[in-house]
Length: 292
Image 1 (cartoon, rainbow, N blue to C red):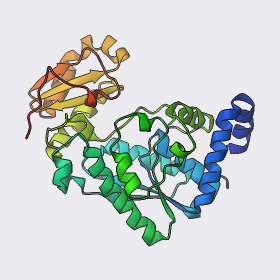
Image 2 (spheres, rainbow, N blue to C red):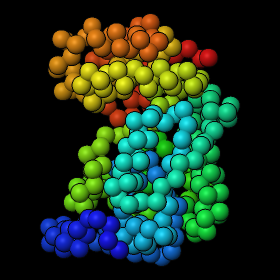
Image 3 (cartoon, rainbow, N blue to C red):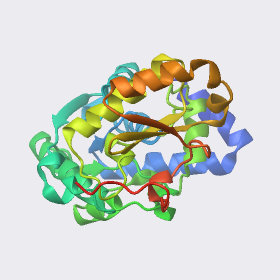
């Protein structure tokens, strides 16, 4: 199948430069062919985009459907990115509403919150797959994810969702390398977890708080900042910025504070340790989040 990308030449080059990675990609294609037809949980991020590209190559567009869950937890910018990437790939794409916020187990924001979110998502995708006659629902989890706190993996296992990238042992770094080789625009995309991940465990997830985080992060991006998180601590927003962003922050500090306050926060705090993955799972002793 012609996906619009020079796959044959890319694979030939990869087999010369990195035969082990080329072998993993061929294993991925073989695994997808065995599955026959697939419904992919698709965020438009690094992992799901490569999985979708491989599925198109292995199966053809008639046996692939990418499905994006839409809720208050997903920022509009992320949805638009997923749409743009699907259009570039020629990927059949469907958006379905998910209602995880109505689940009190999710809204209470326990440390396994993602389990309840993914349970809702995978049940929606299983319904779509059944209606469309697609054999398998796929997750974009990779081999690195099993080393992290990922409650959503249990939800996938319970609903017989397959994770081909993980099954063939592809790491995040290898997925980025393959994505770059194939010319996917997502190859250097930053991690984009849901907006609820900005709320410390125990702080209830509400549409209003999610909107506050989305608006504050949009305001910071409008100022030219890129690597960032706005952590919600009740009336306070704690900003995590990448090292490069911290270095040029001083001249725009007043605008940063104004933009975050305009989103509904009373106080704007700067985390001097900066942005880092997994910050949600750190023990925050300096800030105690309100519980409701």
